[in-house]
Image (cartoon, chains in turn green, brown):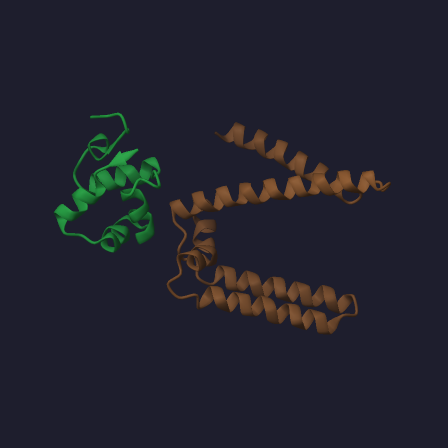
Length: 66
Length: 132
């Protein structure tokens, strides 16, 4: 599972810690999501997408998706 | 209920309190077994471990084990670690049971432990299947 979290976060000028605080998770969890080592739960994925004003499928996509 | 339990488990005081409580239980058991010195040593060790969790600083491992660092990723890690621990434990118990039987023993207490583990696993599977 790939995602655009880092790109979206950088666009907003947020640190991993700031995004983590907004999502109620640890900074390490945001880092793990960005690097693809951890796939978030559906509620967290939805929260992340809503935070950036995007649809979930715009933020998260499968490895074979374009 | 689940939210309350999560709040408790994510409190920074949860693991230190648990350590001290376990230390007191060790003290009580040792005292009952006429080994007060061993019980005091056990309480001191468990209290020290609780202090490590309480003042563990920025370590994610200590923070997660201690409570405050627990989020959904940590819960996933915890679940996998628990499963791995259970696997190691059951393999060890079965191995010890076979070894004891091969030595002419009756397999106690490994047979009972293996039976409890097996029943607990089946019951857990049934409950979790029903709830999901």
